[in-house]
Every structure is written in C-alpha cells, then in structure tokens.
Amino acid sequence: MVFIGLMLLGVPIGVSLGLGGLVAIGLSNLDTQMFGLLAVPQNFYAGLAKYPLLAIPMFVLVGSIFDRSGVAQRLVTFAIAIVGRGPGMLPLVAILVAMFLGGISGSGPANAAAVGGVMIAAMSRAGYPGSYSAAVVGAAARPTS
Image (cartoon, rainbow, N blue to C red):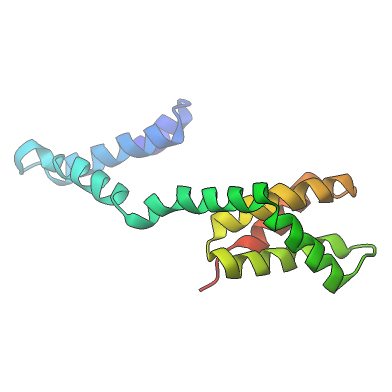
C-alpha cells in the first residue's frame, strides 16, 4: 500500500520500492530489536557482492576492444560473404555476426556492445528504424545457456 501511495505521489520507482520494503519489514517484525531493519544492509551487500556483476564491465570492455580493433568489422565482412547482399539481408548479417562473436567472447553484454557498435549504424544507414536495429542486435546478442 505504501508503494502504491508513493507511486501516486510521483516518487521514483526505486525509492518507492525501498521505502515500501522497509515499511513491510518493520511491520512484520514489530517484536524484534530495531524491527528487523538490520537485515536490510546485509541483504543489500549480499546482492551486490556477486562475481558475475563484477565481470560485466570487463565483458563490455572486451566488446569495445573488438569494435575498436576491427575484429567486429572483419566478422561483418565475413558474414556478408556467407549470406550475400540483397534486400533484407543486413539483419541476417547482424544475427550471424552476433553468433560468431558470441562464440568468441561468450558474453551477451560484450556481444551487444561490439555488434551494436558496427551493425546498428550500418542498418540505420540502410534505412532500418533504430528501434528495429537495436531489437535485432539485442535479441541476437543475448547469451544462450
């Protein structure tokens, strides 16, 4: 109820979620010391202290290195040689490049950074809408498991 009330007042979503959660924790632990609110910083730190979260900036750096060094452009040239040129082939090239680069880096964020840097600009020059280009690259760059 607190969350909805704060949202109706125009408070940002993150602040509304945080305050609503604090009120819920406090009301459910009225009989404990400090109303159970000492668990909040512990859970906050436990959520942030995860190694995959620390690795994401490095994967994005790898994607930027792929883009700046020309590896991504060479992959685009290779994919065009496989798929060919023609109407509607540029999204297929973006998907193929994302497949190759995903096999090299193994990371969705790095893949999206490298492929997006090259292919979104090429697709916008070819007349594709920016939202469509970003959706194609984002869907192609997602990690598979």
